[in-house]
Length: 234
Image (cartoon, rainbow, N blue to C red; front, side, top):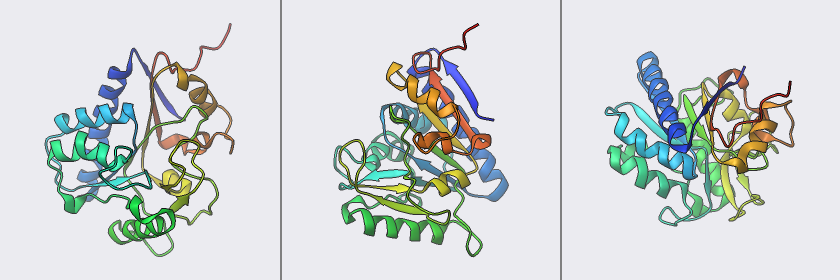
């Protein structure tokens, strides 16, 4: 069952998300000696990363990945890597050797192929199994869109996107299968513009609402009052 937490405002959402991510990273590192964290872009995740850089003092053994990326260079203002670099990676002093960015400048196909190879190389898996990330931070679009695309099989790892609903249209993304395989996903939503998407995500699973297809037993949804689904009548 999905864990839904509703808080007063966006700052409280970021604070709660930070504490949960720290706990999950510490748990993973304690259990396996390494923790794999995947980041997304966006305003709310960006604030969470700023708090995370301050809250977690020891980053040894934590590897940083990305859930999706725009097909731009790493210094482009639209780059998710640039956001993470400014808010988390540099402030926390996370080693570049443990940071695996999606190379958006290579284009969707080559970038996706390279990233799938990196995941399979650096995350221990058995033959034929998907790489398992410990924590994936996700946002949600007004239409229920998340990082992944649905046009792939159960063994797909990383995919090329040519028709993203928000510009730029070309992107690289983890597959839905990898998101579902993760030990935990933390999805953040703030503002009234996300309320309908959150409601749809918590409803019946549907390909029309990609976020509704995440594995709910491993999903934590943290929203502010404005983004919270309306209370049932009666």
